[in-house]
Structure formats: C-alpha cells, structure tokens
Image 1 (cartoon, rainbow, N blue to C red):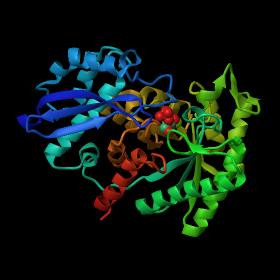
Image 2: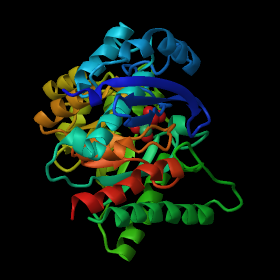
Image 3: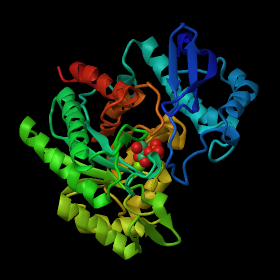
Image 4: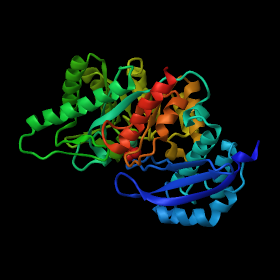
Length: 405
Ligand SMILES: O=C(O)[C@@H](CO)OP(=O)(O)O
Ligand SMILES: [Mg+2]
C-alpha cells in the first residue's frame, strides 16, 4: 500500500462534553497530510460489560498513558489497515476492557483514523466504512420525556422515545421535534405553576408517573401524526438495570419481580402501542428478555443495549437464547471500529436489526451519522433537539441528499 496512508502522527487533547465533563479528542495525521479528528462521548447509564472509558476514571490519566505508551507506537503504521490499527491499540493496552488506555481514547483514535483515510481517498467516511453500494437513511428516534440516570426526579424509565415513518430525514426529525414541543406545551397545562426542565439529552423531565408519561407521549404523538400526516412510532429505553435492586425492579410506586416486570412491559406494548423497547429487563437477564421477545417480538423491536454492550460474544449469546430482535450500537462500549463492525455483522447475520446511538454525554462529533449508513441501521437514536444531538441529525439531512439522488 502506498505510503500516503502511513501514520505521520497522532495527538490527544482533553475537551468538555455536553455535561461539562472531560473527554478526549484524537487527531490522526497521515503522511499525505490528510487529517481525521474524533471526540468520544460518555454514558451515564453504562452497561456493566462496557469497556472502561478512562484509565482510573480520569481523562488526564488516559492522556498520560497515551503520551507514554501509545503515541510513538502508532507512528509509521499503515493507516489503511484499520483492523491492524485497532488490534495494535488492543495490544498496547494489554487488557480485556481497555482499562490501561481507556476505551474513549481507543474509540477516538480508531474513528479519527477512519476519517483521515476517507479524506485521503476523497470519499465520505460512510463510504469508506460501508462500501460503495446503495444506502438508505435510518429513521431518527429521539428522547422526549426522560428520567433514570439522565435526570433528577424524572420518570423511572430513562427515555420515552418517538420516531416516525417520514421518508425525508429532515421531515422526520422535524416531526420528532414537534412531538417534543407539544409535550412541553401539554406539560405546562397539566402542571400549572410547576417549573419543568430537561435532562442530559434535552428530554422533558416531569414529576409524573411512568404511566402518565406514556399517556402524554401517546396523546402528543397522535396529534402531531394527524397534523403532519405521518405514522409515528412510540418507544422507550427502560434502562432497567439502573433501577434493578436485589432481584426487584424498583419503581417510585411499587416494586416488581421478574414476572411482573415482563408483564408490565407486555402491557405497555398493548395499552400504548410501543413499538421500540430497549433494555426492558436487567442486563444479566437474557431469559426475561427472551420471554418478552417471544410474546410480542413479531410486532415490536426489543433492543439490547446494556444487555450486549456492542460486544459480539454477548450478541451471540442473545442469538442463542433468542433474547431480542434488535441491538443498540455504541462504539465506545467496545472501543474500536473493528469490534463495532463485528458486533453489527454478528447481529445482522442473525436478522437482528441494529440501532446506532449517541451517549447521554455528547460532543458535536457526527461520526454516528456516517456509521448509521455504513451499518444500514434501522434507527439512529440521537435525541430530538440540542446542538450536540442535531450535529448528527443535520449531517444525515446532508448525507441523504448524496445517497438518495
Ligand atoms: O442508555 C442509553 O441508551 C444511552 C443513550 O441514550 O444512555 P447513556 O449514554 O447514559 O448510556
Ligand atoms: Mg440504553
């Protein structure tokens, strides 16, 4: 391979994410001078089997490790060999979960390399990562009422989500944003003289029960669907592990055991028409997920996030146990583009749908917009409003013009 693609140098700096926490941004420069920059996001409700974002939990420690052990070793490596580069990162790290370097460092480097190489090739990153074939934009799915670990005193479920079937990506994100707006207006009427705010992903945080949130979502989405003449889809991310304690799902009003939780989820699907259901059970409970998928999987997408953590071997377990029919994809849960592709391919080979996702702490990096095309994701989950969320969604407005014309 010609020397244009050899890595001339890499660098790492600390920046702030949308929550004001420190994260890292990597730059990779090739011999040709082509440059790729990527910043890593951060989760709040992280899965137990995710890679470790930072060495000793601190971005500074990861930066030190990078300067001492990584930077020099990457020099001169053939950047066209993405898998080799990603494996080199794993070898330098030397642990199973990137705890020496930090998975956010490997993520930023891995994606920055893919961006630099695409630039040198003169093609967009989605073409480099996904191939030169016909592509289709995903549907946006966004958080409109939130709680869990993304908010203070919100609903027990982490996210109530909306999506719609508009084939124009611009119209689709506008419809989602209108539902967000309508919920805000209705909340103002319902909760007179009570201040309301938004959580980490700009979903409304309301002092209401989960059932009230479901009803508010349904009413608002139906109104917008009628006005805009589109079909809306309702969803949630229960992030159930975040309220699972000692064998029970702890809601504000009551506790539910495994069987009751399964029934609660099936009832939510039946009573409110939820189509998209993420992490309805604890992250260790493949069997509980499988019961839900068996009962309603023909008419609903059951998605594993904390359950799989973008890890191909966990996804294989999900396939064997028929746990879900969908998988959430987040690069920094596994740490490299190569391993993310493995996760996607493993899921796709078993006809599982993939959903690419932001993190609750984000930057304005738009790489997931590109990956959603490369991976043929069914949905992209990236909020409904807010600059760091719209950075991805607006990029897909641009990309749709390129791929569908
Ligand atoms: O659970 C999730 O799906 C994500 C994104 O919405 O949250 P976090 O980044 O906090 O893990
Ligand atoms: Mg989730």
